[in-house]
Length: 112
Image (cartoon, rainbow, N blue to C red):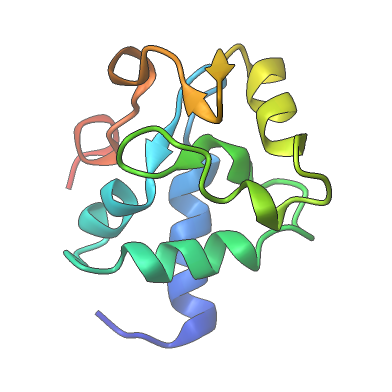
């Protein structure tokens, strides 16, 4: 996999654009789908850089336990939760409720 920053970020954004409303995925699931087993941090960097892009629903990417660890990268401390709730995802104490049920696995949904 080429670690060229813009190209890698674009690949991440392509995956994130596929996450349907009402579903979430994790940084690690995206990294695994793209062939980077330990690339979750790179996915996080891509999500941090996506906040000027209106067509990338960054709120739908959480950590592997369903925690809103990226919330501090949004313009307000509660915006990530608000966006998720407007998508139909329930959040309590910065945790996606029923995470396993709303988890969207790019490998299963998009194939390899």
